[in-house]
Image 1 (cartoon, one colour):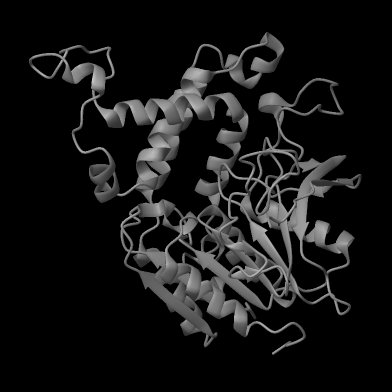
Image 2 (cartoon, rainbow, N blue to C red; image 1 turned 30 degrees about the vertical axis):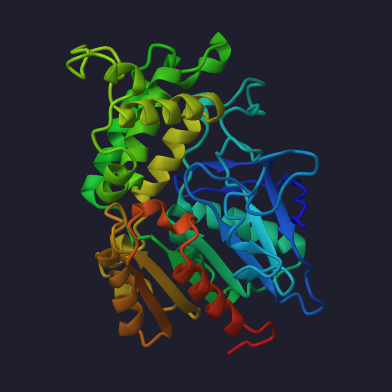
Length: 381
């Protein structure tokens, strides 16, 4: 029987100071919880989402087909993060387009949608907002904070910003900062959006339009980076579409037509994304990715940045993930070991690229399950 998810919203009147020097007030966070908070309130696990995910982490919505949470293979009764033992919280970050206050919502100061005027947010801002949510839920300390990709950056930041509130940090397919290549991919995607004639400087809501072309291209660029070369070759290779192979030459020799299956697949992903994701949210979240660098304030020394963390760590990387390569996870491992912190690390030989952290690799799921089996509510060591 599937876990039934219930979306919830928490409103905050007090201003949240942001790293940019701005602040945001009268905001709300969308979230979901799964399982039961125990009497000691020490079995809570916070799940942090990546770029285009949300608070809907696990389970399904009642009466809705195909509404599984984005990490439903990981979280639920009897699953690696077992909701029979843990109280799991999924939260949607500020600036997102899936329920929490973001660019599409009304700016109290103007009565108009924020649009491009929504303040810049960072990973550290998200963590502080999440901490306020936990305060409201009466949770002083997390049994674990967990995330993949950008979610892993938030888990790492939790351990740095609020060391006494986290007993375990699970950081999957992530990095201590983005490489120049990653920042470059993000910038190309952002330029595709802001140069779309329908973007209107970020205030396209007022024009009753959407910058779909820019979003399509941004998603296509991103999707290429999430997959490994092996997976793309295995799934598509140089296979032509059915309509093309009927031609004697095998090609239409056109600069406009979709001829290869990979082209068709990318355009499908781009079209789908452009219908549900917000362009300003894409700009905000990719910028937060770019800005994250906890070592910056420590002269680039990650070991110094992690000097005061108290959590125990599990880090997982995947061999074919070239966007967040295993070498980046090993940087975090080394910095933790430099500080004599307890850390477990696994590098999984998987063909799926960055998307591997969302998939059903038995070795991966068993590893996470084994780690969470060791996490005992009430163990403050």
